[in-house]
Image (cartoon, rainbow, N blue to C red):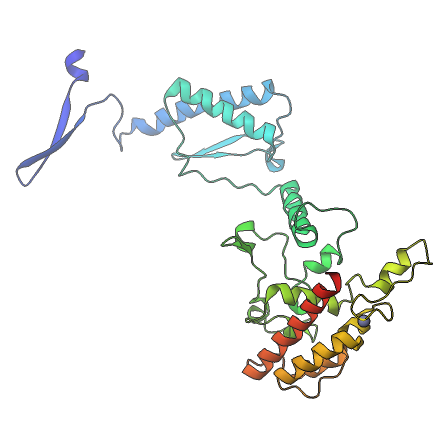
Length: 319
Ligand SMILES: [Zn+2]
């Protein structure tokens, strides 16, 4: 037997011998015995999987395979494993594969393996993380969301932020930053429930931080004092605008009838050559809407200025 196991083979190319490989027992590819052997060996794996599934409490079949109590399918030399996507069920499969590996010496090729898992609770967990990041920059806390999640998930042209819950994380988290899917409206030119202000906020040169603030302003979702007052039990607290210290702040006051904000708005309007900009964000927005879809430098700069004023006034108000 010694001499059989010590054989080695070499390949001659152009008359020269190149390297060698050792002889081993086994079937060469194409041997008609191969499929039979594969079927016999896979039968063992099937039994191991079934046994583990019975032994370990908590294993759940894939919903479509429950009636047949099916865990694996073999086709040619491919193997499909199906189970409900929870930790216990995956553990059962891994343990059975491990046992199979120890008995047969066959190791599944991880790089060649593909896992399809789309469990609902994983999608819910991802949504929870997205909500937490959006509203709290960390974990989601009760009462922190300013806009209903369903509305956030609407496309931008319908007034949402364009998050899609079924989106793969890799599609919306790129190069270490959350992608805001800015090309949404370009991809869908026939806008159905389009909001007319979408192009005032979202354009390829927009600054996402600023755009997000304008988006909140459009829905009047900023927590201004008039809104806070309605939750306040003690009505004796008289709130005043932190910028002018005169009256309570509202969306209309901060953007831009407050004397402090108005002076910024005047300067901003002058800088971008928009003399018709009044001290009312709604009027400014309406004046931008007709040409908002165009990519003219003057319009783009005006939209950037509008968003920057909204952003920095809100920052200053909270400073
Ligand atoms: Zn003020």
